[in-house]
Each structure stands twice: as structure tokens, then as C-alpha cells.
Image 1: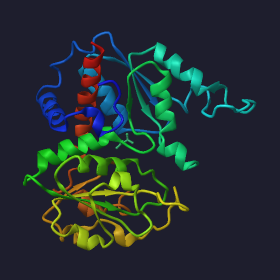
Image 2: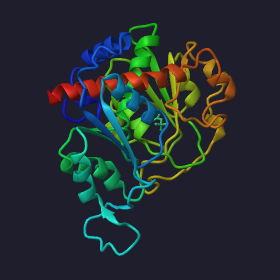
Image 3: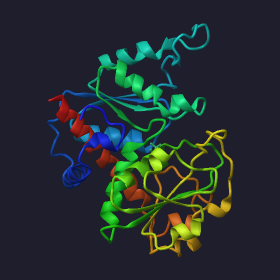
Image 4: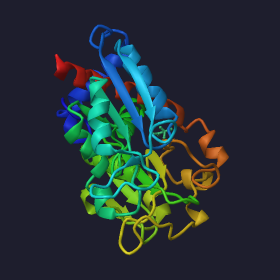
Length: 318
Ligand code: CP
């Protein structure tokens, strides 16, 4: 594998899952693979889980890691071509990217949707510039439209906890005070569509996702109806995708918060969220603290998804 930006890059998903479970049994069995190889992790946005889990995964493989927080200590970067750089930005991304490529073997990039220009976001302008100009394998640590390391960890977690071959997985929108990107829900939908699970998406009207990601999911506007019989409840907020409201919060309806009453409609479902989560907006204290909440094992599996992806990229470098 050269680059990793979406589920298709993994190739055979069942095989990738087998590799992930093999790594989970003994995460130090490939320590020679990354010897004398350097991972550069570039963050345009904040992170807790991605930063720690990816660094740990790289260390498990024997790699060295460098972390660059673009907004803390680096030169301010211009990303638009043609701009007369007489403002506060000292360096252009088009020089910065190949320079970064000089110091490492693999680059991970986190660059969220900016909600300034839908086309720039949905063509993954920043991530693709890294792929084009770094000369290195690049993987997404959450880009504008997808968060594949998260979705891979989510899938590993569902596979571990599922009690039936074809569980019912419900992704529900939940309220949040800020405009959040669609990367996590898009990506989760894309990965669920790559399985044969029963997959339902529920959200208030106006929060329809890009049909490309919705795929063959059933979209249900009645949250309670959607949750009936669910085996997994995956909660997430996202801002509107559809024009003219792209990137806007159009509704903060707290009746969509996942609470014990809603969970009672399910088939004793497990509760999932990618974290960080705003308690009593997205989910109540009672639900996230309940035995059915698997948000911590889900986060723990971020190390496994990152290690599986890094291993596959390192094998491609051999
Ligand atoms: N879920 C996730 O990506 O967490 P961070 O934003 O903390 O990395």
C-alpha cells in the first residue's frame, strides 16, 4: 500500500481485519519492519487520540517519530497559489511539503475541512498536495472528508463486540454547539457500506450527508424508529453538508441527545463515539458511563488500526 486515505486503499478489508487482530495478539512482532524509518506526523488541527495512538503504533513497529504542529512554532503557511505573500504567512505549503518529505519516510497529515470553500474541502486539497509534492507515502490522520484510521478502529471494535454475523448499526446525529466537519460520519458510512451489516443513518432534516458516502444505508429521519433493535449506536455531530448551509449549525435540538430512554429502544446496543465527546449534548453521563459504552476500547483500537496501516505502508517500502 502506498497511500491511505479511504477504505478502498486497504484492498481486501477482511484480510486487513485479520492482520489487525494478528497485530493485537502481539503488537511487537514487527519491530524490525520500521527500523531506521521515520514517521512525520503533521497536525494542522488539535488531537489527543490520533497523536498518541499513531505515535505508539509507529514505536511498536520500531519507527522513529517526529511531530509537527503547524500552528505552534512552525512558520505560518500559505496554502493558496497565486497569493502575493505580503501578510503574516512566511512560507508556502508548496515549499514546506517537499522539505518535510526530505526528513522522513512516511507522512501522516491531519487537516480538517475549513468550511470556507466546499470544493476545496471535498477535493481534499491539502491532503492531495501532500500526496503530490512530498515524494513520500501519505496517510490521513483525519482529512476534510474522511477519518479512515478512526473508521478502521470502529470496524475492529464492532467485529470484537458483535453478537450476530450481521448486526444492526445505527449512526445518529446528535447536537453540538459548534460546526463540526462531516469527516467522521462520511468515513464511518463509507466503511459500514464496505461490510454486509444492516446500516441506518438518522439525523434531522437538513443534515443529509453527501450521497457518495451514504451509499446503500437506510436514512431515517425519526431517531427513535431508527434506534429500534439496534446492536450498535454510533453517535456523532456534523454540520450541514447541503447548500446553502454547508458548514453551518442549523439545529441544536437537544431532543436528539442519546439518553437511557433512547438506548432502551435498542437491542441492548453498545454505545460508540469517536471522542472527544461533549457530555449531555451528544450523550448523557448515564449512557457513556454505562456498561454498554465501548468508547474506551474503541479509542484503544486506534493504536491497532494505525499499526495495521503503517505496517502495510512499510511493507510497500521494502
Ligand atoms: N477521534 C479522534 O480522532 O480523536 P482526536 O481528535 O483526539 O485525535
